[in-house]
Length: 296
Image (cartoon, rainbow, N blue to C red):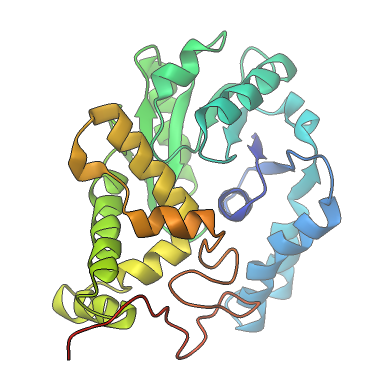
């Protein structure tokens, strides 16, 4: 089966890896800008090389995985059976890109979006065919869950096909009826937003908030470090969608979150968020952001 992953950011690279590691899939990694193909291919290979260096895969397996991926522009999706759009979390940008893909791809191809919060029904209404949501989680090659989100016009047959594909790549599909934030982000992102408000109020340090949730709630990662991993721009976009869709004040983005997005302090992707990171995305010790006074 031929898969096109359209969008070569962190999520697109991870989704491409997930399919390349499974049996029976050829992957086109489509760079929306139409340039920097060699650079993207090197980025795609980087986490797989780490598996090789740690002895988790053989040299033969490494070559097998990387050989299944071709980096191209969006025209590479033309002969693919499944197209997964993984562009920025902006509905107009996604619609524009999916409209282009709709013209390029065959009528039999399934169009999907890796949106983390946007309306599948609204996106579908701007197209000639209905799409379906396939929401992967970061890191996509590792995380088991894929939220499968049908819109109002998505067929049951399409839902079944996507569920089967998700299982085939050794992940777990959970069908989610359309709603702002779906399931995971509806619960997770407001928690992160509240952690940012707590930091803004100076109730505890950034490190203190993260440690409290790790030790007190048994979370593997604190909410502010997790925000850095997800990307503060993504967290902000999801909060904005949930707030505007529900008009419920509990989903209003934290002011500090908005400021950090404006400052391009987006987390691991920019090297600075609530913490600072080296070139390999590792947290620099003692680099936690100092926001305000904390009572001792």
